[in-house]
Length: 99
Image 1: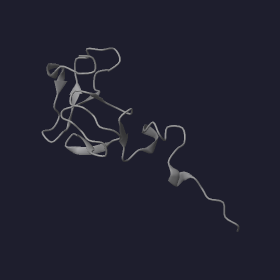
Image 2: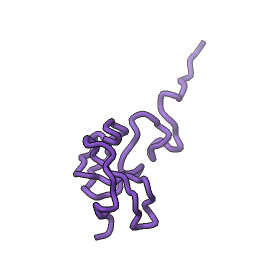
Image 3: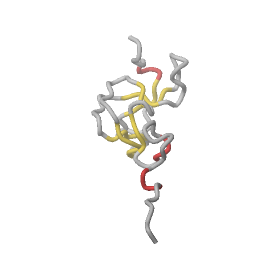
């Protein structure tokens, strides 16, 4: 099945993680070290890696699917999300004031 990664190609970094790391790529499009969903992750749910949240799912992610900027966003670094890649974070925009 295209898009589903075989479990023997993955490593679990922490028991609380809902993603695993790819250690043996089966596809040139997904490289070593990329995340794969360990379970179904609903849109808005935290992505857990190393036992801590690293971001949030931007849409539902099926078990075995690639987890990356196309379906998650960082909750910490705005520039690493697709939506803000070229716009930058909104808090950096300055409002004009009449002073």
